[in-house]
Image (cartoon, rainbow, N blue to C red; front, side, top):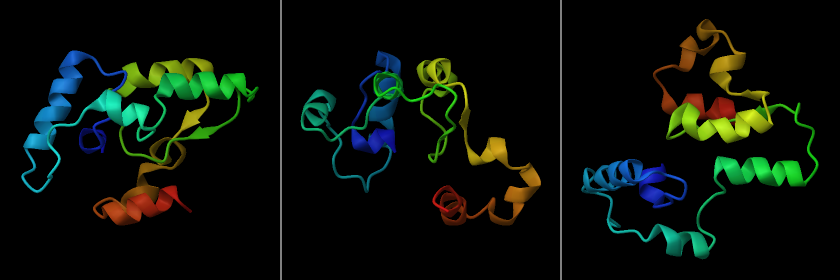
Length: 119
């Protein structure tokens, strides 16, 4: 989860504040104050979607390649996904390539839903 990683690069100030509130809302989460820039400099943050699109483009990856998003919902939704989907329009996730009925057997079981991503 983005809130707990402290990696807020590319987030607007409102999103950064929301991520901080999420951390404080979970008393079991020990690290409340996280320096996002420091984490990023240490290589502890994933690429942003914009950086991912730039990297794939620089590597000469065909823009029609299918990119599978194995995570849950992307924080920031379509606004954050735009850079990637503009560069690589064939972005899919299990919810877009399977019928809703195909997911019924594991809908209330997050570990089973996650397992589908790694099959």
